[in-house]
Image 1 (cartoon, rainbow, N blue to C red):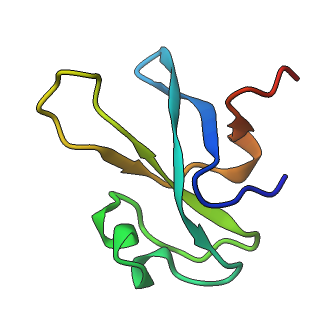
Image 2 (cartoon, rainbow, N blue to C red; image 1 turned 90 degrees about the vertical axis):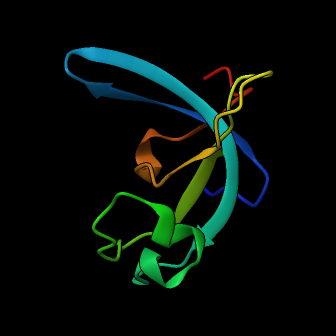
Length: 88
């Protein structure tokens, strides 16, 4: 599935036996075979940055309204991403 800038997406991630659904916006499109660290937002990620074979995306998950927290950036696996309003 292809996404474009500003698409609202969701995916789930698990850590320590807890699964969370994350919701955010596509803020960068990474071409196949390109190291994510070549992009400014990619350098903010806590990820090794090894190139992926398929097009991938950096997603911004903003803080809750009223929070002083900064947005967080993720580089989720493409096969886990879904459009937010996709009922499938």
